[in-house]
Image 1 (cartoon, rainbow, N blue to C red):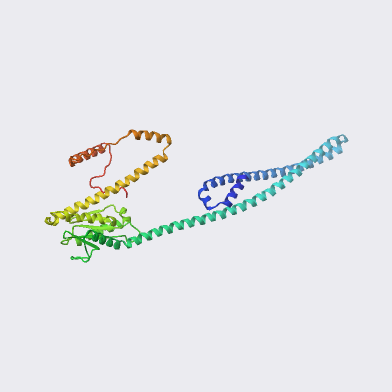
Image 2: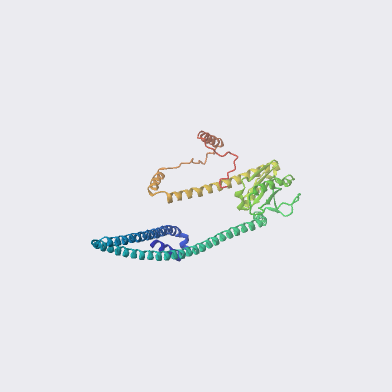
Length: 400
């Protein structure tokens, strides 16, 4: 009963830390204890069978004893010369009687041991059930704590979304004041957009949009419908044909489309963190010497190119940062998980590798034709290898 006693001793004294980190060892010990208990039960069952066999043997011996007594009487009636044989039979009878008494004592001992074992088993099972109930209560408490933490995070997100419109307005006003951009409190055209600034005689609209609740499933459709509704502003004179929707930063990964080309106007979806570079890019138009001679259409084309350039640049930086993190994690994981011999061989191969990207010459312009030709060669090689590459117009959403 060593394993069984050890198991219940550890169950009795187990604490929370041991339940968390030593449960596997306790579980293995429980299997050993259970196997020991099964062996004990088998021993008890064998004892019971032995007892039954002994009782049957006693009955058999009793019957045989009666037969012997009958034979003795018969022998006494037959002849005196059978006295020696009768004495021998009586000695054997006494021997059997002693065996019967000894077996009876053993049966009594087995019965007493069985009762003690059953009582100990019931007590141990009761303690085990109590420990299980305590463990279940602790697990329920942990689950409740996790649910409460998740609810607190959702509440924080809701508060952030509720304050999003005011935060966007305050941010735009601060950027305009610092960079001497005219912020329009009351627009001279129909409608009442959230935020409007004036650059080069054009009114640029920044509408703040946030989810109504913590379910972001329909948020992309909501943004699309809001982009279509901005036509009421973009169709008016002196309103820039590039309109911006400002969404919370923690919702941008739910949007697969960040640019909407809607015929006469374009809508760009940005975050509050992107407001300053976007406004500064738009303000660059004022620094052109010929800006006052450009038509609104030309200025709009310049702004569209600058806006797309700013979005593409930031998106490329975002993608590079994502892959940089992935590559760093991959290198760290390879150093941690690879066997030592393979690591040494990898280091040797790494020392022998060398990357030589094209060098940049100050007096040489990077030719677009050369870049396009190189891109066509890469596409042709990818098709030959049956690889799928993203098209030129695809929006990179690798992190989503």
